[in-house]
Length: 104
Image (cartoon, rainbow, N blue to C red; front, side):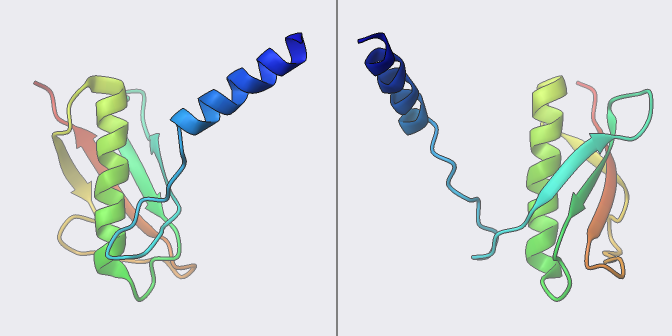
């Protein structure tokens, strides 16, 4: 009986948190963000497989940066410090942008 209750609880939790992919212009990107200095407000975002899809990858980078800033500082305001106006994709097809979560 205990096993049934545990399995039921796990299934209920799984149903409450579906992992639907987020689409940017109809495309899915793998991205990650991380702090790049002791000041955790300064971050870097990498979006993989961005070559040839730069416009959508920029939107994915903005989304990832918003998640980073909201999760750590409860703000969606940010300032791009690198990769802002000039979008560059590395040789392996990764879009890299750097920014700073703005203070309120």
